[in-house]
Image 1 (cartoon, rainbow, N blue to C red):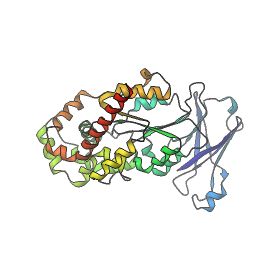
Image 2: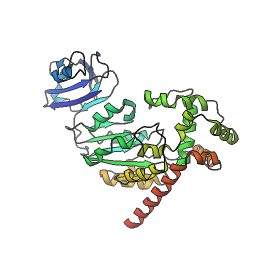
Image 3: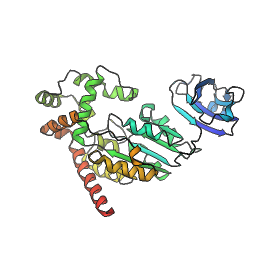
Image 4: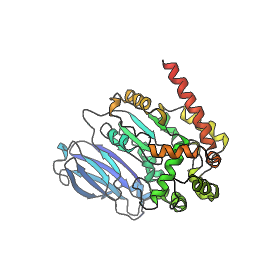
Length: 349
């Protein structure tokens, strides 16, 4: 979907919401810190949208006034969301804690660092986590919110598709994960997803992961021999979920595209453009660097620490040549990135 805010002059807030469905009637949910206020149907005609064939009626604009939102001017914590998906469209500036920067945090774990995202909501006017859930067009729109200077986005994005925004005001940060740890985490998550539907994954991810969820759903993860056999006999669609996901994320335009050795250099080039590059082996340095960039107390940045159970599984995976063959590109990329981080740290001292 496409959306934006056009103006907020206190007693009038105007914007638009073009839904995914051609004939859907868009509606915004308006709320503030006290709770929901009203659901307002989009009834303002946008002729250009109609002429371009993007919507059946072109009625995609919304206009909030004192008539449909009583006390609008005084509602300093006003929020506007898509009533159907809950997607944030707009919220009023934060005072006095707002950080006027544009940050994209690239998530490299299948299980996201939700505590970090929750903390960032206190500092950024527009804040949206796990944005890959909403699809490419909607994600692209969040980068194009030109009327807002305080933006925090996070997600497991294919970075190549959005790297142009690193030259357009966005600063990228990432906490890279250990390849064996991520494989262990993915195996544990895939097994869990067989019985519990994850709330942080979008429909596209669920479809992509479904063969692996079914395949690993009954696997006994504490049985190293069973894990070895499962990895060895996995069909291609299952292997794709585990094959060097970090290299593919930074170098490939499509999450299902297999990586090659040449992609390692491409991934390194993209990562080198990030403002902050951290590693899960040293979360303290990442929190310190992020705190300095944002000028906030790094103790308020809650970085999820490594799970001991997942660590033990990762150690077992290190003994399996088949696991190494899955992760060859990521292991090479991880080596060079950690080496670069160490050199950068020594240069700073």
